[in-house]
Length: 88
Image (cartoon, rainbow, N blue to C red; front, side, top):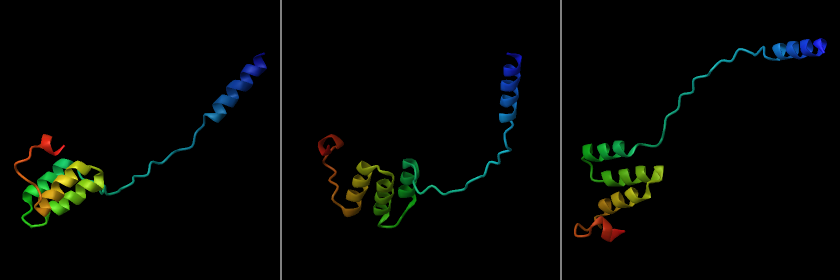
């Protein structure tokens, strides 16, 4: 019985001797922007197609509701008389 315990303990200790691991730093650029970043760019931009750019940025991250809103602003189809509830 003692031999079995010694064998199990030595096997356990030998198997726990791990290799040294190196952590590799990966640098990548995130293609998606936060909504606050997109809104800040819209406020700062003075170009006429700024809403088209923001619409594309929203669509790229999957926020289709804001993408359609900005696309309508870009194309001039947004009516000021309608509220958000009426649009939905």
